[in-house]
Length: 264
Image (tube, rainbow, N blue to C red):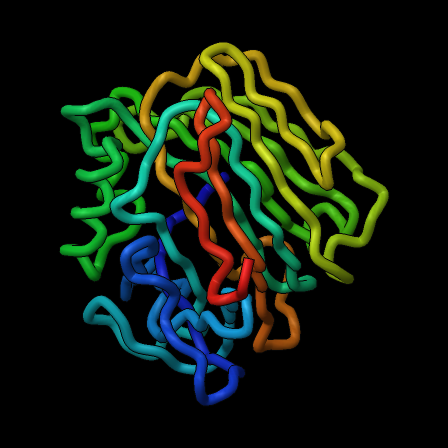
């Protein structure tokens, strides 16, 4: 997936007590992407939900102005991991946005290494994922759930891998199963079981795709919305809502959890 990882979000249609997600677990960044959109405002966490909002208008970010769209994203920082099980409970919005729950990572000593990548994003407001791919040899992307309703339809989800070398994708596996459920009408659990040799993707506990691939670098979590420039525009604002994110290691130890303010 061509994700210029601009982080942050847009206009918040939330109540007054909404606040940033837990800053010890998530990082939000002002950013700019190729003239297409900004990531510029504040994600909201309240009532047990993280809300990412995409909006249209005129926005300024990264030294640029009059950008027509604003989008939202958070990345896990300082958390990253290698192998295990990841689950997120998400309600995706409708046509007009391209919403993704995914992982990114690379080997130590490259721009894709999680601490290096996140640090570069924090200190480069005019950049985006390009700062993480410049000398990635290689880095990897795992799209646990990539939702492109205008391009694919409301019942399709993408389960993908991509290999990045020196700023470009060179290989990968793209799967877009039809899960038979309109993914915009309610919350669903999106899951990845990651082992040294295989990736198993699930929706509500049922396997949707399996990829036989060895991805052996540490990775961090990303939740984001982007404007679906290829699939037409929607009726903005559009909101992606996340109820929870949990990660277990290979020994089934819970190593990361956030239920966004709700009582577990």
